[in-house]
Length: 599
Image (cartoon, rainbow, N blue to C red; front, side):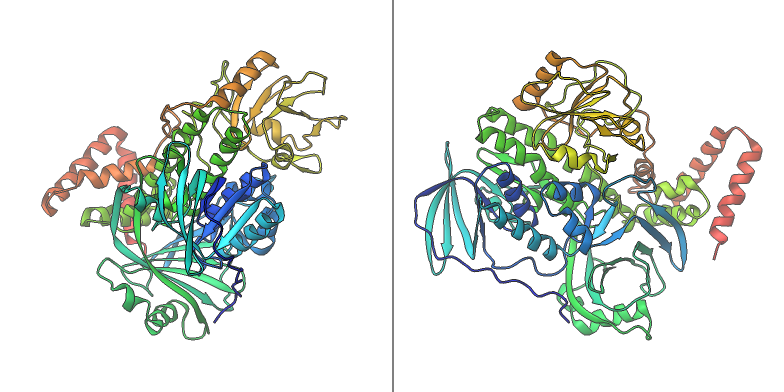
């Protein structure tokens, strides 16, 4: 049953060979189109080459995170996506036949976009195509397949097959957005660093009129799918995404057999719920990346650069953030605003961000698919305790959901020169809040470049090359009205404070004063770039429940069953010693027993 009519775009004939283009994007999927649209809106003409003549087949990346929606809103399609998509902020985790806990990802009011929407990838790509064409600066060549490339010192030579013939062109810069099976990556002989997990999952897009609420629901070992895990998401058009864990020994082709899929879905829904299958696929977990994302004049974005498991919605959203990160930098170089060294910061920022995604994805995979009896024992114990104990709920990992990376060690940041009581530090993505009758991020986006946010009454002081916005707690001409006080609260700012935002709406620097010389220096630093490698920012002393769980599992690695049992006994006694309270120890023993006895 088809709920979506795939557009067919006209394939132009082979082009005249020998032409030169400033930017060529290989791959007209979500990431490639996002990069092309970002550059076009900054005045840079872009050529997109794609081997197909339509949008992606199947729902694919459906969970669009708040940060991606904010990026898409800056590009002009965010509200269209929000109108079509299914909004969700809440989720539920179940173990066997009972609810373990429920969560709310955006409990606080005053945000322009929800934590997530579910929207099939083909809609996102369709909206991006429309927006690209509207710029007049994006040329889309459908059914033009890249066969080979030759990197040169000042360009990249590209060999293209089209219409039964072929031609060559030159690109000043080439963006490889051609997915997990990247032709460009293969042409350069580049390998991934990371791991492939020995498990398989089935995706089934099911059309039905179901009464399930529009929340994320994840089951560990449900009665209808013994020994495995299941994820359920609602999409537009009465389509529901169901992911079934299959195990490594499952045959992918057999599992995609429609009758076999229908049997799995029917066991989940019950005989009284009619449904139709729309699309199915089988995937394997991969958590890996290229060693470097920049290779001379070639940049890798999205799945061509890095791959993660789908739990946590970190794949497609990371690719969108890749495009968001690179777009303003490449445009700055092409317009002469910045030196080419700025482009090195793409690696310095996006490698740590994607390492963070890979870490979270790997840990989620280890929790969802335990690799040993000890790992399964700890996983099940966490799930049993989570219903009543908050510390255990923090360890439940059905996928740490996508959040914007804080680029804490970026060479583009200017460090704080005084203490701040919270807020968004240098490297953090801007936090939205009501601003007058609109939203703060929409106001920042109006300028397209560096923006200075000043807290207090407007004055005439300005900095060259930087737009200025004033924020005031009361209605004042020339200032954004922080009517709810959320802008000041979320940025931990008071009157006189100043925050500098980059063109991609990340914080470049902040001060408790207005200092034109310091502001100019921070802008110059953010445009200079560098080759320093960053690392994911972690809050000193912050508890990491995933690391605790990983350490418990690792401690049992290569131990016999008897040795594992003895290790657990020693661990219990040592933890009891740490409590140093016999009453607390007795209460803890009773709580552990009660959790295990819960039906």
